[in-house]
Length: 71
Image (cartoon, rainbow, N blue to C red; front, side):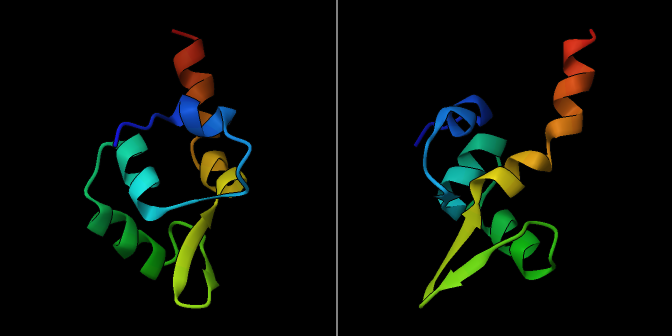
């Protein structure tokens, strides 16, 4: 699956999956799971499923966007 942060910004979905988050960041999905477990990445449990609120996830990288735009 190829997903970028730009794809997530354009999405209308309220939540993203661990797999989508991992693809956008170029990391293993287990890294996302670890970050959810330690509270670094916000998440919501829906029954047995764990999803990530899209806007809160993107907000984690808002400062990075400002720095890249100034280069």
